Image (cartoon, rainbow, N blue to C red):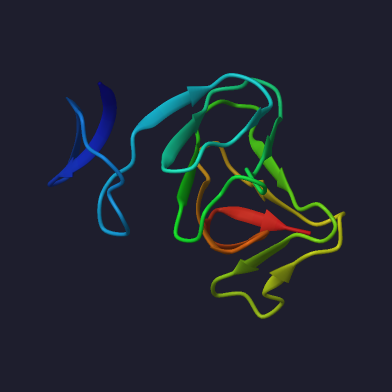
Length: 134
């Protein structure tokens, strides 16, 4: 059984359930990440590291439509680098594409959040809250 976080009014309730891929409107199973890691598709990741966690996207294995969520929680923050030849499109930004091998998404605060979805081979779209880019 996986842990899902469900919003119930103003409070958050943690329940145990066995759901499949929730799609765009559902919730994802959440796991804790304690160090640098490769993110899993169809999973929410709570970053618990006290140092900066370097997170890799599953470029080779993500299928079109696969969602990934990253929640900051530990004090160290997180960084998601974009290797050369890979693309992340940013929703709501004028410079909306990260591509050159030195670009990244980084948390700005302890509780920063990123929602990603694979839209093509080696290509994701990202919705960010309290994050910065380079």
